[in-house]
Image (tube, rainbow, N blue to C red; front, side):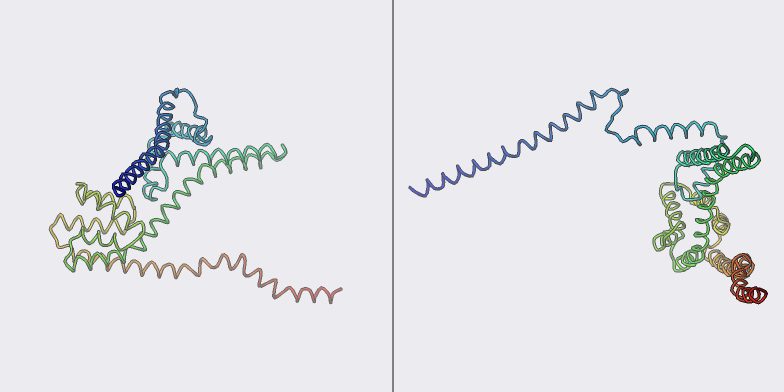
Length: 306
């Protein structure tokens, strides 16, 4: 008699605990549903002309204004200038979009021209020639600084590609001579190495995997990088495929030529080093030596004459 009563009591207690747990979880669900409903109501009730004040001022006002100014300047600039900028951005590895660079260009030009105007106003009227010179100097700097920065990015990336090419081509040649296909060898180089060359090879292989012809993908790779050695290598590969020549000897010849060019480049830089050292020697080191050597003698001579 006691055992059935105990079992009934335990069943009643377990059911009561389950119901209380469900009741305790219900407010959280209702809170979540109320928040979702609030967001839906808010998105529906929000007028497109109203301004959401919870958005930061930078994203609400400044960013749309600058983007609108960039679009206006892009509409004014010639198509050749925009295409040249886009080509340089591609060769630099796309550090920013075209509109972003135009925005940077506009902001830099406006800042430098503003500084030129401030200097023009601050200088006295008697220095009219200096005022005009400073105004023109700051205006020219504001126009050319962004382009110089972009050209520097392109040259830096191209130097990195040139340094990585001999080792990468040796690895490609070894893989092809070991029995791998050209695509597999390029994939192995992209996998085992890092840097701009590996990134461009990976992009080329993705284009080929998506259905683009390999010669077209290789030509686009050469255009994106803009390095003479890489262009020559790609041209040799395309010609070998068109003529039906075995690719391994072509790769071996290209690898030897790249190593020879790397050695010649190192020798040329070594020969240019003494000439480049003349300017810091004459401007900074020789005057310091003269001061150290002749300074005490001049002090003694002046003391003896007095």
